[in-house]
Image 1 (tube, rainbow, N blue to C red):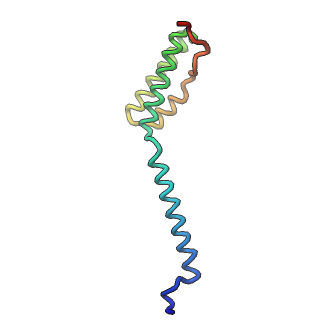
Image 2: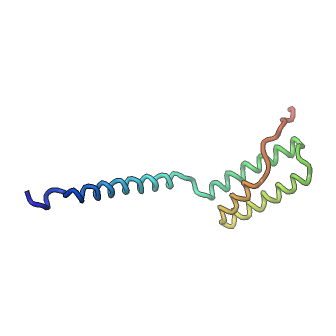
Image 3: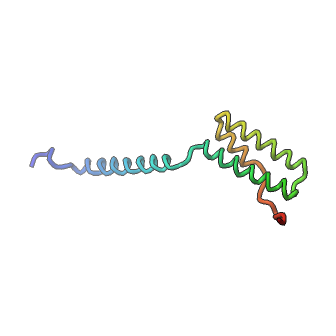
Length: 107
């Protein structure tokens, strides 16, 4: 057998490393491809916060000043995302201190 027909002991670990690195990169690329774009996250936050604002308006659990500040931040986040500054917009959405209403109005 010639020396070129069989991988040497040094080539085997190098080959194994190359294969495993290739699998790691392809797995990371696939995970990134499955992650929604930041613009979609902005739209989701916008919809979520808008719904919470409407619920709190109906329930009258927040005073006018609180609702005013929440709406100001909401519009700021919306405007920032519209300017394609998605990470900054998402940070603003996350800073809006509003959660689910404590009570549901009777229908």
